[in-house]
Length: 272
Image 1 (cartoon, rainbow, N blue to C red):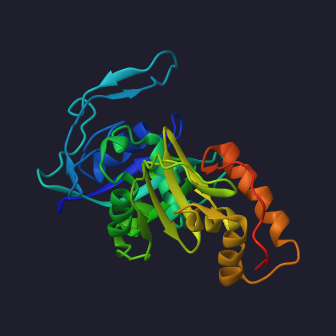
Image 2 (cartoon, rainbow, N blue to C red):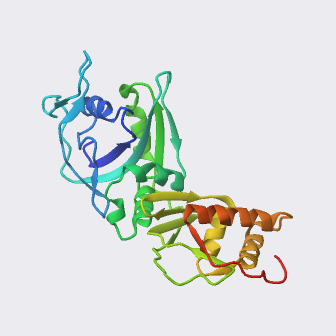
C-alpha cells in the first residue's frame, strides 16, 4: 500500500509468513520485513527489508533472497500498524475465512511471538491499546498465499474499537497473607474484560476465566473465603455448591502460583 498502512502477519513457523510476504509484495504491497515487525511505542513501524529465507522449489535447505532479487515492491518511509492477522494454513481450504478474535484471545495469540514485550512498563495494557487501534486481531485460514490479498484488504478496512478493558498495574507486594486469607501473587501486568483476566506472571501469560477471574479480582487485598463468596454472589448470583467450587478454584489458582494463602484459620460465621 502507498499510504503507510501495515498489516502484520503472525503465527508459528510453518504457517507461510515468508511465502505470503514474497507473493503479496510482488504485485500488491510494499515489503516491510520478514520474521520481525519492529513496532515503536506510538504504534509506528520501523521498515527493515531484510532478505527472505525460502525453500527452493527442488527442496533442501532454506536460502535467503534479497527483496530486489525477488522483485518486491518498496514501502513508504512512514509506516503505521493498521492490521494484525494470525495465519492458519489449511491444505484443504477452498476459500479463505476470516475470524475476528476477542481482545483477550487476540492478545494470547500475539504474546508468545513478541520478544520485547516484557521490557515495557505496562506490556498488556499497551498491547491491548495497539490491538484496539488496529481493529482487533483477525485469524485467517487459507490454503495458498495468493488467497490472502482480499482478506488483507478486509482487515485494513476494520475500524478501531474500544473494548472497555480495565487495567490492573503490576504488583510486587510482599505483605504477608494473614491466616485464613488469600491474595494475588506478584505479577507484571494484567487486564480484565467482562470478568476474564489476562495477566503476565514471570514468563507466562495466563487467562483466568469464569470464577477464576472473579476470585483473582476479589483478591487484590487479602480476603477470606467468605469475603470471596460475597463477591461471587454479588456478581454471578448464589449457587448451592458455591463454597466447594470456590475452594476448588482457589486451590487451583494457588497451584498455578496466581494466589497466595495464609495458614488455615476458622471460617467467618455466615455465608454469602
